Length: 581
Image (cartoon, rainbow, N blue to C red):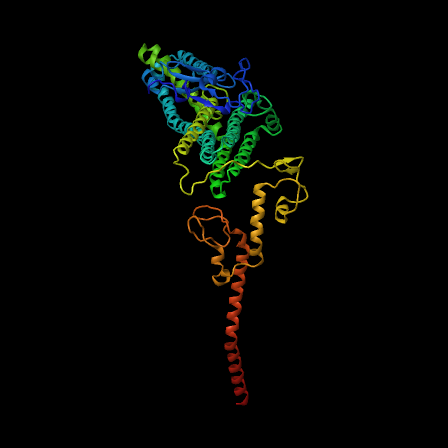
């Protein structure tokens, strides 16, 4: 694999405007406590990839590794050159960063213990006088015991390493990967829906701000997952949110809300905020509820990914199993060191120097391999910390930023060109003109645009239906709803006559878009998902259907009455004949 910089390291591409606030407020960006960047107060501030790398995370490339320094300032491996690794080999890359030889000092301490055991066995054999007798009578039985342990221990330990790697990959693919993918999918769904429906630039700007807020909360959820593990590893009571607050991912008020909940619930709280705000954004576009199911599925999958991480982090492998694996490995290692020390001593006393060198090398290599794999399993058990081989959360956030930025720019440009060329909208396509001013809530009361507060004791819908006179100008949506309810009033008083004749089928009607027949309780078309316009008469049609069934049952009983009367008369006559006889 050729050494090349990843796509996310491009210098020309802009990452996203979700990295800072776009509401005109100052939000300084920082990467480390000593690095700060003065932000601007533009209505929309785009942060280029170089600016992000310079002030938040710096990439460092070597001949083998590409690393990124994240929020904590610690470097993480985001890519390595696989071809160079296999060509140079394990010995040539042994001292590279990220290998088991320089992760910590545990491997060195374990190796020293093994060497001491070998030295003790070597010295003990030096006191044996009859070397040949010991080599031909005692050493074979010792070697057979080592071979028996060597046939079982590698099998059990290999299974343990496989389980640890599967857990690690599950957290990466079904955990962090699922959350990142669903965040990109939610952005894609929102952008692809809004960019083709919102023709007004002011409305589009409002939607972009809402979309950016959702993406920022999603990035903050990724940060909270990693910050929780790092706080536990460092012994802190809770993870601080200063980094994402200074970056503009969350506001000061939102940070105070997150501090009020448990650290393990912060990521779930952020996703609930995304759920509410993205749903409101789709309601602004008047997206039909069946289409909204796509958004709900994406949000649910993101929560499933978050729960997957929680399950794997909070549920360790069974303690007796891990203890037994560790016991078997250490027993085998120390026994192997003892036997190798004996063989080294015998080879040295009999001047078999080639065998002495081989056994001496095995004293170091075999225990190092077992201890190294144990250390790797230890690091893989919680890959959200600050170690160099843990997940590079900063890189994942940058990729999500790049993906959402490309969606926002390209999809809108495509539809702008289609509108100019009069290629869009297509037949039956939905577009929105200028959106209406929203209804505001002031002191718990509904305030219409340009008017005073509506009476809180009177529902807004009842006021529209009854046509109560107020000094405020009526909202267009409320007026349209009132007109629809007034038109539906005769239907509620007297259902259509065709319902009784056709058993309620004509009252249910057909979809004007695709011609599909509505079911009795349908509010939306099962074929195309379009909302049913004649749903106001649905309840009355259902009453007519039930009344018709009861009427038909009563008529059937009436028709059966003459036959029942004849049977009664016939039975009475037969009884009289029997009594006379």
